[in-house]
Image (cartoon, rainbow, N blue to C red; front, side, top):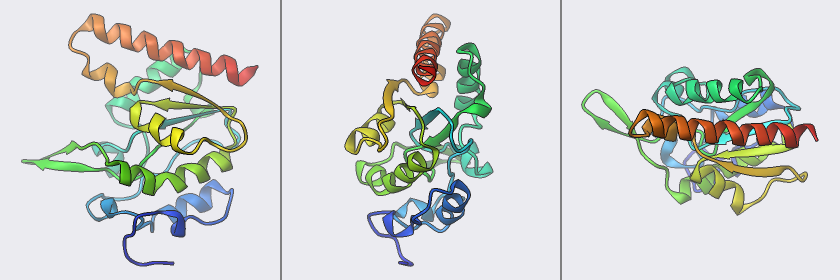
Length: 199
C-alpha cells in the first residue's frame, strides 16, 4: 500500500462490502493531497441496506472537526428536508463525493473551497465502494459536484440516480422567499426518491 499521496484512492480501498472496514481503511487514505490539511477523513454514515443513498460534495468545517457527514448547517437543512419528505435520516446513508475538507484560511476561519475535478476523480473509488456496500435503490446527487462524480462512472447494481440541489444552496439563498422555494424543491426531490425506493 503506498505511503505517499498519488492521484487515486483505489490502492487504499479494501476489497470489502463491510462499511465498518471501509470506514477504518479510509482514515489512512493518501490518494490525493487533500489529506494533508484536513483534520481527518469524513466517511459516510448510515445503515448498510439503506434504500436511499445521498451524496454531497465534501465535508465542511464542522464535519471535518467531528468526523461525521452533514452535521453542520447544511446537515441541519438536509435533516429538515428529509423530515418534510417523510424520510427518517436514520434510514438513509449520507456521504460525500470527496472525503476530506478542502478550504482556505481567512483569519481564524476556514472557508470551503470547491474541489478540483482531479480530487473528485481521485476520491471516486471510495464512493463506489460505499455504493456497493450499501446497495441502495436510489442515489441522490446533492449538487453539481456529486452529480458529476456519479456521471463519470454510474453505480453498479442498477440504482436510480436523481439530481437535486445541495442543502447549502438553500442556506445561500438571498432572501426568505428564495430559501423557501429551494427548500421546497429539495423536499420534492427527496419525496420522489422515497417513492422510487419503495416502488
